[in-house]
Length: 304
Image (cartoon, rainbow, N blue to C red; front, side):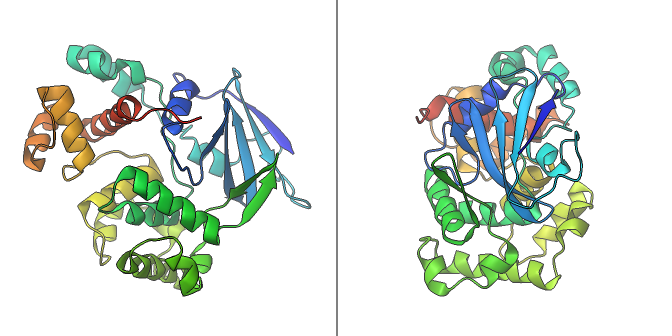
């Protein structure tokens, strides 16, 4: 076991992060226990349980090493953990922008300091977001959890079982019955397996793709059959922390913008959403993301 004492860049409000994660009814990877967040990351290729104690200042992050695993960077928080927790994000210009705008300050001021969790890598982002296509947020959570528990490597700790995100090989070679058990549509199962096979064969390379600039990555993702604007934009954001796109065809965002900016109920057209948020460039995409977070916090009760 290795424990790191970490000073995230201020403001970094783990209380907000806990509040958001507690809205997940069936979490797959980021699991909340009291004031702790646990998830399994692949550290040097080994599934490893990582635990964040959000009750302390500075943060205490524990790496529960598996037998025989060695920490090759003593005293330094491994990059995959920093990446997951978004600790290299510098949102101070964005927060200053919010503070200078009375409307945004009233709407989003209470979210300043929210850490922006990232996926472990591009593959995880693609698999997770493909599952979310065209279904409700709650239904997507259930499908993601079933996939992770069916195919991911399990780790037992403290009376609980945690699962790593399945690897490309685990999804590409999964028995048909295992994928069917996730209750994901057959069409989406085929896309998940195709994506996994592309990564496994090297046609898609996580390291090379994540070195691309966000726009180049976005355009590359659009070349994959079954990947449109919404999916590509979400993948870029969750994998890299770059929120440069407005998800104008996201039904939840359409309803949230209508509620917060127009005082209405229900969805508004995508172009109307773009027109409203374009006033806030270059931060329109990030503002859209924070609006969704606020929507979740207000519309979904905490669990546990």
